[in-house]
Amino acid sequence: MLFQPPKDVPTTVFARVPDKFRKKRRSAWADGNHHGAELDCFLEGPSFDRHGNLYVTDIPFGRIFRVSPEGDWTLAAEYDGEPNGLKFHKDGRAFITDYRNGIMVLDTASGRVEPFFARRNAESFRGVNDLVFGADGALYFTDQGQTGLHDPTGRVYRLSPNGKLDCLIANGPSPNGLVLNKDETILYVCMTRANAVWRVPLTPEGGVTKVGNFVQLSGGLGGPDGMALDEEDGIVVCHVGLGTAWHFSRLGEPLHRVRSCAGLGTTNVAFGGPGRRSVFITESTSGQILKADLPVAGWPLFPDRA
Figure 1 (cartoon, one colour):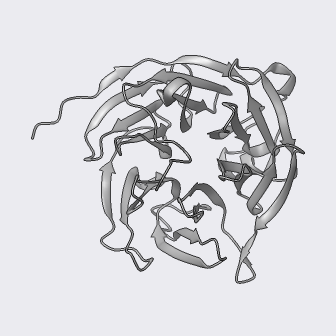
Figure 2 (cartoon, rainbow, N blue to C red; figure 1 turned 90 degrees about the horizontal axis):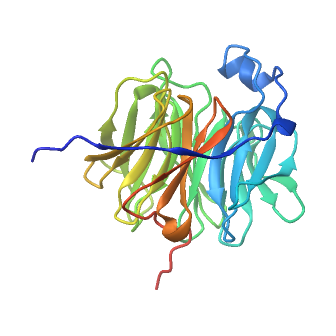
């Protein structure tokens, strides 16, 4: 089979962090991850609630923003942490992978952020990054820290509803965004520093088997970061440092290249809008959310299952 080159898809700016929330300053997170650069924000973790509001995180300054369907910004929470990934549980709570504090949970009504799962066997995580929920409420998350090709010891965990924690991957070169396929037999994980997306088959017994490379990327100043699943079992992969979100079929065919109209910091993505046919991408270097339309809808966060 001959693969066709991906079709280019343009983006527009959906919303920008308002000036009142911007003030360039140093932060411990930027010191460790951006060579001490002064930042006024760094957006990540886009996720829609049931009312169509888009929530995004601001890693270095411990902020969670709520963006209305009209593009209006509200500071939903601010706390002493470094929030990265954010996903909504079916009960309405927002769960956060916090680089400094572990798994946190946000009550969106009160703005209160509290620890949920901070340590494993009395040891802190290396630096959790992103998360996704299974239909049964199991929480899959990545523990990236500063791992990479020089230190391929990043981990991928599954926290079952009964509190059992399983380590699924222990040799990841910078595990980052992750999604489950529709029938939850495969977990896809971005390995940022390897510039790859791994395919992780899940066994009925709860383990993994025959882990392989699903997509090997090239170029950019970073690598694959956040992901979202479409309703045809394809995935949209943000390529941070390339200003791109790639859309791949379930076979790994490159279908579309969504090009940033702003900077190169395309960190994460969520489907939303009418019929979930738009992708909303956090462009972290400019503090903006980009929007593009795709011909296939996103897989719902809480799909109806018999």
